[in-house]
Image 1 (cartoon, rainbow, N blue to C red):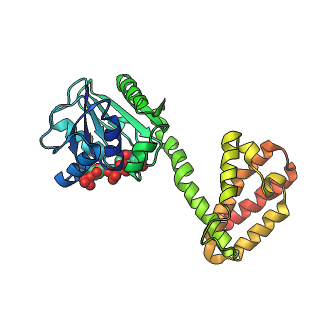
Image 2: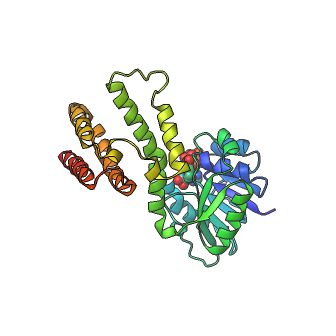
Image 3: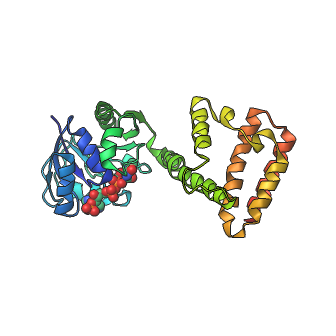
Length: 291
Ligand SMILES: NC(=O)c1ccc[n+]([C@@H]2O[C@H](COP(=O)([O-])OP(=O)(O)OC[C@H]3O[C@@H](n4cnc5c(N)ncnc54)[C@H](OP(=O)(O)O)[C@@H]3O)[C@@H](O)[C@H]2O)c1
């Protein structure tokens, strides 16, 4: 069985090591303290705590430190002298490419594998990871080996151009993090309208329905509401109501930015007239300009 050592066995590192332990022999687990490494080993159910100052060879190295420490960790790994020419070294950052790892020696196969999965709860992730897409790039041999390993643990690997990873990552941030911001903004507006959402959120069925429609069809088919209908008087009333809450300028900013994004989708849909969409776009832009 090929061997894998992990530097940075936190939320993602220890989960992947646990999942990969049927495919690879997990060796050294390296966090900044022995206690932290031992905790990770206990979770993984394999491997042993080790220190970056005293490394032994391995076939594959996973660097799963925070993004800002990846380059320096790669450098420390290289300087330890333990890397062999056929080794694979990979990280899991969404925004950095394999070239974040710079080794002054040819033949070390660098890669990055970014799972589109939230590892906030590792005990849950070991059961829910299968079916997660993973963006893979780097040196061909590393991409081939890692794609096959991630396939074996139920992931859906796909290739990505390393030079476009920042744009790719901004998409995942928007889909995951900013979706939460949007849902929370809509909940705040609901509360401001006097609707009690302290228990169940009355918007939940609507949100789920919209998600289902979007994934079953596309943006053009899933978009409904005043912009899609070209109902510019309703949009004007929304903007006036939001304006009446000067402490909540953010609401207006979110409304206008996402409204602007709804205009071209509505134009493609063809329900609203071009004139009403132009009027809506101009109202949204002038309100946005005031902020
Ligand atoms: N979390 C996610 O949902 C997720 C999803 C996709 C991709 N990723 C990527 O996965 C990577 C790790 O993220 P994470 O969320 O797992 O981070 P994390 O939970 O903070 O874990 C980072 C680990 O690295 C260790 N560490 C920090 N600096 C180190 C150093 N200089 N040397 C050795 N170990 C060090 C930390 O242990 P000690 O503090 O005990 O040293 C910790 O165990 C990042 O590249 C991130 O972008 C994360």
